[in-house]
Image 1 (cartoon, each protein chain N blue to C red):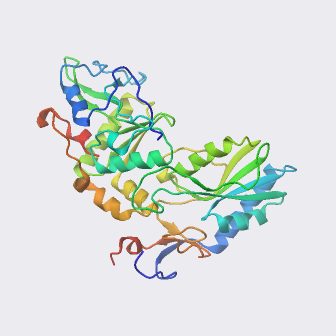
Image 2 (image 1 turned 60 degrees about the vertical axis):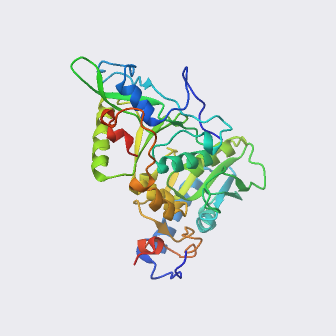
Image 3 (image 1 turned 45 degrees about the vertical axis):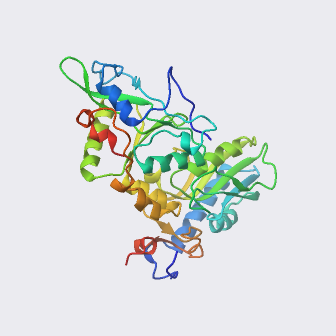
Length: 194
Length: 188
C-alpha cells in the first residue's frame, strides 16, 4: 500500500459531503480573504483521507464516484502515493470576505506535487469544472492540476484492457451517493461531480 | 477480445510507416552513439512491446552495447479484480551497478510504469540512467518524466503495431497504426 500517510492534526477519513459541509458551516476554510494573484497557494487543509499503509479496500475514503476509487487502485498498483481531497482552495469570496465557492481537487500526489481532478460526468458540469480550474490557476498559479476527463479515464481503462469497466464507471452510473450531512442546496455541485 | 483479429481491416490509419520508423531509428542510433562514445552501454528493454524497437535500435547504435530484458506486470493485466501491486515479472539478468544504462521503451503515455521502473533501477546504482522511447504520447501523461530520446510524438489515439498490442495481438505489424474503435468497443 502506498497511499500517502495522513497529514495535519486531527486528520481522519471523512466523506466529501462532510468536507463540503465544513466549507459552508461555521468552520473557516482557511484563507477568508481573496489572495493576490502572486500569493503562494496556501490551501486550507480540511480533510485528509489517506488510508493507512496497510489499509484494506474497506478502509478507503468514501469516494464520491467509482471512477475515483478505480483511480486510487491504479495509483496504489503503481506505488504512487496519494491523498484524497486533502486541500480546499477558495476561489470566490463575498463582500464580507467569506468564501462562497471553493475547489477541492480529488487527489493530491505529494511525490509528484500534482493534483488530479476527475471529471467524468455531464458536459455542463465539465464546463463548470473547467471554469473553476481556470479560476484556481489564476489565484494559485503555482498549482499543478490535471483535469482527468471522461475520455482520459476511458483511454486509461482501454490501455489496461478494462474498457467495459470504464463504461460501467463513467457518468451517473458510477456515481456513489454518500450520506448527506448538509443540505443539498448548500453544496456546490461542481465539486461533487467527478 | 471476441471478434477475430484482422491485421489489415482492423487498422484505421497507418500512423507511421515501416520506412519512417526505420529512418527514425537510424537517427536515434546515431545520436545515442555520439552521446556514448567509448562508453559501453547497457540497453534495458521492457517487455513485451519494445522488443521490435530494441532489436532494430541496438543494431543502429555504433558503440558496444549489452542488452537486458525486464518485464513488469500491468494493472488489470490478468484479472478483472484490480488489486495488488506492480511486480517485476522478469528482472535484469546482470548487475547494472556503475554502468551506463538506457531504458528502451516502445511508448510512454501515463508514465506510471516508467516511473516505477526508474525508481527500481536507480536503486541498483547505475552510473547513468537515461530513457529512449519510440513513441511519446504526452496527452496521456500523469507522471512527468524527462525523456532523453524520443522517436515520435504522437496524437492521443490508440495505436498498435511494431510491438504495440491490443489483447496481445497486432505486435507483428511492421508499421504503427490506429486501431479502429469498433475493434475495442465491439460496436460496428
